[in-house]
Image 1 (cartoon, rainbow, N blue to C red):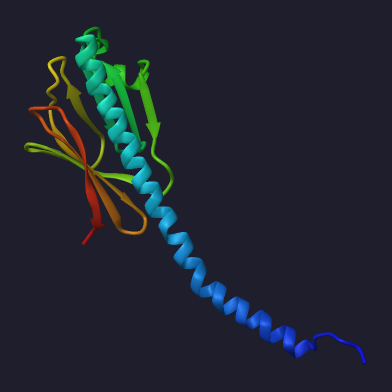
Image 2: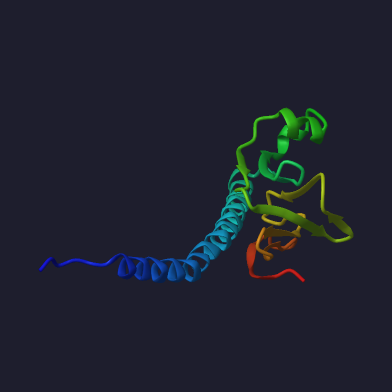
Length: 167
């Protein structure tokens, strides 16, 4: 007598594997998009903390630009703007740090006082005394999650707020 599996037994096992995969795969893939948002937020906040640190230690301001059109963050030495228009330096000047946001993560909005930016360029200045121009940057992903980076204008401290769903 030959031992083995029948075709029906093999098909039943394949159907069970496909059903389990259909339910498990979305649970594995979904956190990856949220992880990209979290990572991007931490990288931007880290770059801004580094900028503040450099501004204080080197006694020279730093300017962080948030380019909503190109989904990019750039950090420049404050004195770079003494010789030209900020727009020209931003487009052509050498950045100390440049970070392209990963696919699926977007700069959604930036707020500072009365200024509310959703396109174009927004900037935050870190001064040599440790203070900053302040503001809040909102990042989102394609799954409806968001993350907020807040910059205190008095202390220049950069903090991440907990992500939430966009309504």
